[in-house]
Length: 141
Image 1 (tube, helix red, strand yellow):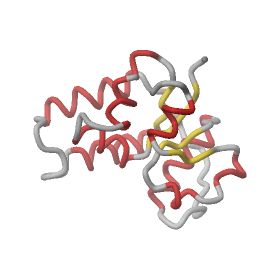
Image 2 (cartoon, rainbow, N blue to C red):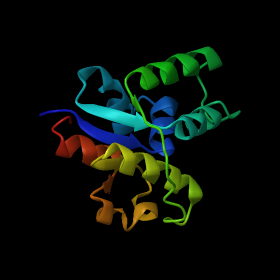
Image 3 (cartoon, helix red, strand yellow):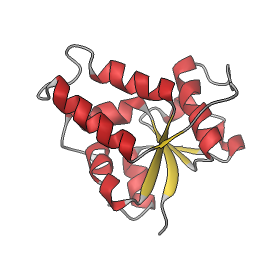
């Protein structure tokens, strides 16, 4: 199966950093397999970093370790420039940030725990799926 373009919602990345249990962590650990290509924009990556470094959000990792993980994630990602705004399309402007990257990168999936927040994205040819749903569908679990 060839690599598929995806956008990882912040909640999934933070979940992977908080616990070695569950599909979020397994999804992050599958990065070396090149079975999917994460897509990010600078504003989305800044959001990842800001939340990951917020006090009390991630326990058990130093700031240096968080930086190393985020830098590795970025090295495996396609960095997208956004030249247009799809805002406001969704209820939460931070979700629009994710949608913009997905549209620009022609991603098939937004991987999120908040699927309901992405209602209506099907018209862009994008599906919102949980990490587990994504991994099962792609034969990674």
